[in-house]
Amino acid sequence: MELLEENVLLVYDPLTASQTTVVQHTFVGTASPFGLILPVPDQARVRTHSQRLRNAIRNRLHPRGRVQRTLSVELTSWTAGCALRDVGDGVPLEGEEPAQRNRGAQVETATLGAAPEPLHDWLLDNGFTVAPAQAAWLSELRASGWGLVGVTIRPRAVDGAPEPRMRGPVISITHGAREPLFAARHPPFALVEDGGEAPALEIAVLTEWAVAVDVDRPPLPFFADILTEKAVNRLSTDAGGLPWDFRREGSLTGFRVDRPTRGMGIVRFVRADPWPTTRPTPAPRIRANTLRLPFEVVLILIGLAIWGWRRPNRRRLGRGGQRLS
Image (cartoon, rainbow, N blue to C red; front, side, top):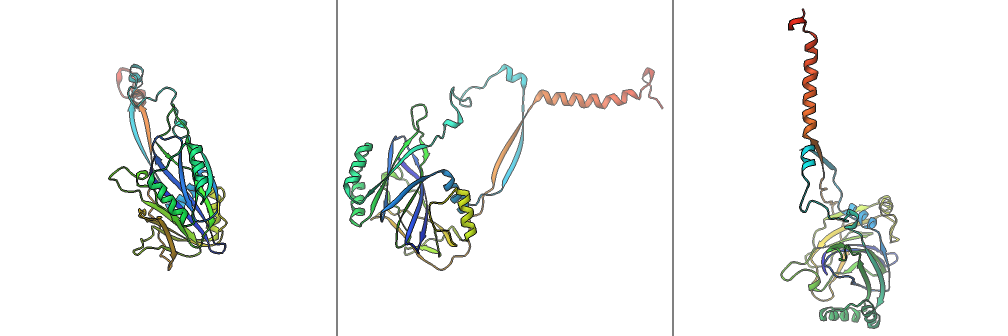
């Protein structure tokens, strides 16, 4: 499996020293089942959620533009449709339905902790293996006191084969934390093919104050705004409930950061001066509508127009075709 995209939201509550991480991945590959190993700095509570939660967060970070409708007219023919039939890739295969193209996946989560035995048992139970680079990275995490969460994903097969591209589950992980942070490193072979660039990492942080990435040259946020308590409640309504307890006013800041390739790969955030309000420009949503007008209908309408135009003129003519005065 190859990781194409990773979207993360960190909700940090300094009053309770806790953090909830909402994460979703996009994969490409045909392995079934496959697993994710997510590091956590403390004992964690893991839950899975519907796509509605992710959509509510994404609509806040990437505002949706207005719908622009277009209309195009396409001339068809009833006669040609009776004489010919479509061939090639445009014809759906027998038994293929749009609902079968994205049927989701079965997901199981397990809190493995920092000891090596639970991880070993989880790998054996699911038939997974880890590469030497992964084993070294996991050992480094455990030596630093970090625990692990295992996620087993079983894509639903269509015609005996899983979908080659799929969105992973929406997962929330709640644990204690002294600062907002996220373990962003993945094995290189799980990111891209040889010679390619690692996918961008999008991380947003919701807490009481504005934050910045704790690096020498921190990136500028693509989103920075204040979320009032009313806005947080509206987000909860759109998401059908939120997996965190932070409900007061806070600052939401989003960054696109380079994925760490060395060490533990921990991305940390520090308190910063308030950023000016920054929002991405909403891209318009184009909805194209096509009106298929049979050519025979056009001919009938033209004939009716000619008949209707000539009929009043015929009434004004007398015998012998002489126009009445």
